[in-house]
Image 1 (tube, rainbow, N blue to C red):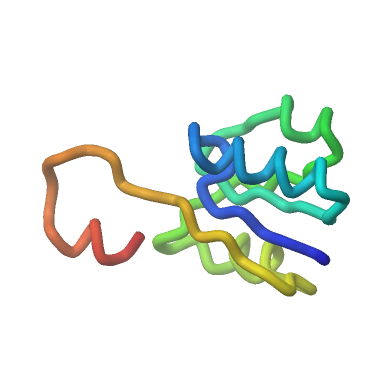
Image 2: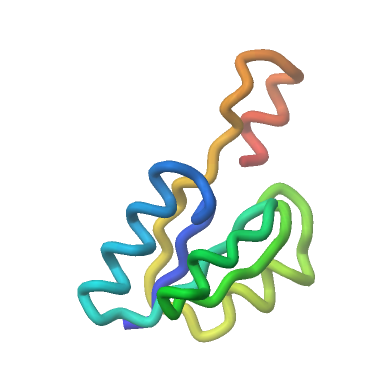
Length: 86
């Protein structure tokens, strides 16, 4: 199955992505940063912001059958709308 993990560079997202890959799934990751260690495990990485980078989102979601949305805004401050966008 082709899966996408949002927040794949984070603590939880990376664990989910690696576990899915070990289970034999085709895995893509969407993160704000670059994580070459994921690609070493055969995970395709997309760098972008889940809250507004539409062109990267379209590319990352192409052909995806299952999404694990574990991206998060971890700061405890900021406008409430920022939390809802993620």
